[in-house]
Amino acid sequence: MKPPRRPHGVDPVHRTRARRRAMQALYAWQMSGGNAQQVIAQFAHEQAHEIADLEYFEDLVRGVMQHEAALDAGLLPHLDRKVSEVDPVERAVMRIAAYEFKHRVDVPYRVVINEAIETVKRFGAEHGHTYVNGVLDKLAAEWRSVEVQAARG
Image 1 (tube, rainbow, N blue to C red):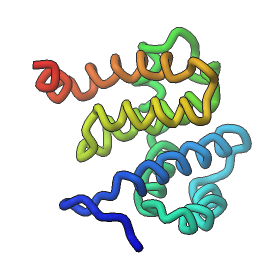
Image 2 (image 1 turned 90 degrees about the vertical axis):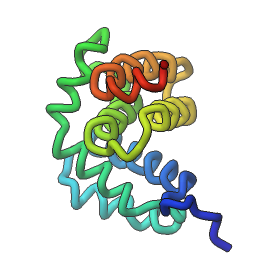
Image 3 (image 1 turned 180 degrees about the horizontal axis):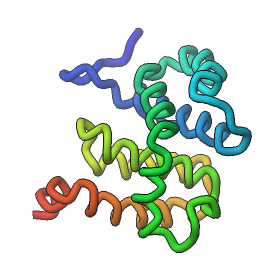
């Protein structure tokens, strides 16, 4: 039985799975290289079996790879080290979040941050979620300023 879908057709559970799979795919890409098609092919089979949003997974992986330099440039002012020195799990998660902030404005910034924090809690270093939260709060205030200001009242 399929879980109920949201009125606008987005299943948050499937999106969460897609983000987690995208993080794993981007982690592998960061470690070994390869192109988007190779990385997607490696993870897409498992993705389909997890009943995840395969289209969203592919958009995240392709988008992060395509816009890596711009995403890293946006993250850098909010980091306390070079992007390349950030833990690979945290780096992959922050790149996904940065991509969503910039290119998936259909996803509320709070959802992006929450998903990133939960993913790092599950896969990252013990206190990595605190670091990711701080960086993404600052990036959201910069890249989604209107939305952040409206939410803060």
